[in-house]
Length: 183
Image (cartoon, rainbow, N blue to C red; front, side, top):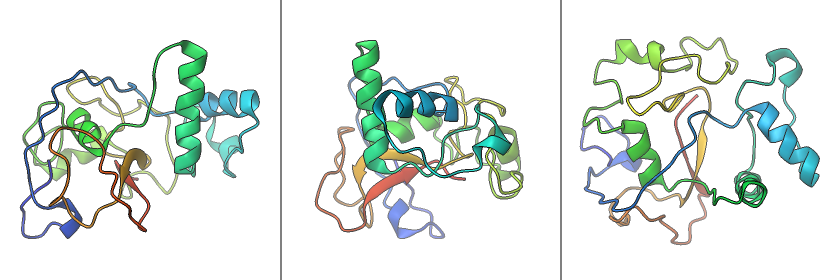
């Protein structure tokens, strides 16, 4: 996890081994506006102010606070009788990489980025329907883009003191929680 590249930001360093010795399951798609609206209607949760009426209901929901993302997972768990939670940062990276040892799930060639993700150079400033780009090798979509995704961990300045077992970094931090993915 992480990198030792000289040009990388400090919060991406150092590259370190993480051993996850348990099964990790991730949703194939990002949570859509439609999914989140069902949650909001059932619980009275606040729906983020957004231009959803122009983008549709199959786009990922945006501007969700970390606490509301956690409540969504709790609601979905209770509704379906299966435990859902936000992934740890290590679990997220493990799922994103899909066994790749390269910089991205598709390799190191940034010219392929647009085949797998919506990001600043091709998104025209808006989100797009989930699953409309290529998935990674494990069938997970939008891991490198479309929106940022919350993780369970608290933010750390770098990976020096991160757990190596896949668990969440929970040391007190005034920097908030971890976001992964991109937009």
